[in-house]
Length: 191
Image 1: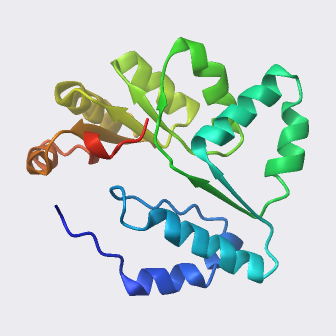
Image 2: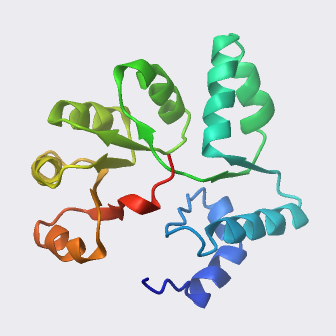
């Protein structure tokens, strides 16, 4: 297994909590068991000791609460009560949302309220739509499609980053040669 290390200088910078005042998003990436949640909880604790209103929630719980509030026609109330008052929102277990017609309204709502997501796409049309919706990352399982979408993204200056799902870390070299933005190991995705 690959050795993942967190740079102490980066942790020291995060502990200053300047990213909160600068309204910057922090995304902790890595395989299961390397301490992403521990770091997130520690930053949340540090923020609360400095009287910064903080909320910690899993991605699945957040989406479920958003969907329930929307179904009850209380979405704005939920946001005003549970999301907006927080200066620091920690969303744990950030996986990805499957892009399809059924959840497009939820995706649009989440993105229009400043919650960054990754969308799994399976066609060029979905890639263009996801980019226009404002998805931060486009996750593609097929390397050939990822290569096509990457070329389109470069030509049309997509803001979304293109990520291809891979089975083996040895595939990263091939992804780099294709100039695809990045790769995710399939076995590190939590559904």
